Image: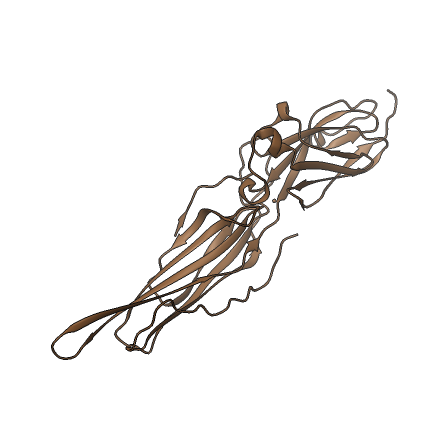
Amino acid sequence: MVVAPHRLVIAVATGVLAIGLALPTGAHANHLTPSIQVKLELVRKARECGRNTVGQPAKCGWRGGYVARLSWRASCGSEPSASAEIAIDTSVVKRDGRRGPTYVTSNPDALSGEERVDIRPGLRLRPAASLTCVATTSDGNTETSHQARAEHVGPDVFVRPFLDGYVATRGTICGVRVPSRKLGLIFQARQSATVTWGLRFSGDSLLRPGSIAAQLRQISLRASGAARLRGSPVRHLLRANDYAQFVRPRRGGRVKLWAVIGGVATNTVTGRALPRRGC
C-alpha cells in the first residue's frame, strides 16, 4: 500500500457504506462477465498516543483520526481460465466534490480481501476500483484473447476536523497563584490572552483554494461561556497547524473553545477562567 503525501491541516460519520454492484464495460461469448464491489468504512478512532504540545512538532499526528477498512470483492464470471487485475484508488475529495490527490493506492492479487487505511482528521475520501479480466479461448487451431473491464466508485467517507487542545501563549494572571503545569491553560477575567488553537484538518477537503488570507477567512475560531469570540485566525501569528486569536473573558467560569472550518465544526475543548482579584 502506498500513501501519497498530503497536508495535515479535525462529529465523525460512522457505519457501513453500502456499495452497488458495478456493471461491466465489455462482455464476450466466453462468459467473461467482470464485476467488482469496493467499500470504505470507518472502524474506530485512532488510538491516542499522548497529548501534543500546541506549537511543537506533532508527536501523534493521528489524534482525532480514524482507522478505516477498505474491502473489495471481484469476479470475472464463469470463465475458469480468466486472469484478473484489480486497481483500487482512494482519493481525497475536494470541497467542491471533485476528486483530488490520491491518498491510498492498492493493487491486490486476491479477488476479495480488505486492508487498513488510516484517515487523518478533516479528510473526505472516495474509493474507486477497476477490474480487468483477460481470458484466452482456442478452437483447436487458433487462440483468441478476450478482455472485459468493470469499474465502481464507492460513497465518500468523512472524518471531521479535530481541535487538539489549546494554549494561552501570551497573557497575564494576577492576584492568584497558578501551578506551573496549568500555565497556558488558565484564563483570568478581564485579562487578555493570545490563544492558539491546535487544529488538525485537511485544506484539500474543507477549504476553497485561494490566497492565505482567503483561506483564513474560511476558518472561524470560536469561544463561548465566560469568553465570547467569533473571528478568523490572526495572520501574523499563523504557524503550521496552529491558529491564534485574542481571548478576553468577561468573568470567571468555563470557557469553551472550538473552530468551524469550511462550515464544519470541530470538537469542543473546555478551559477555565479565574475571577479577577487583587489587580
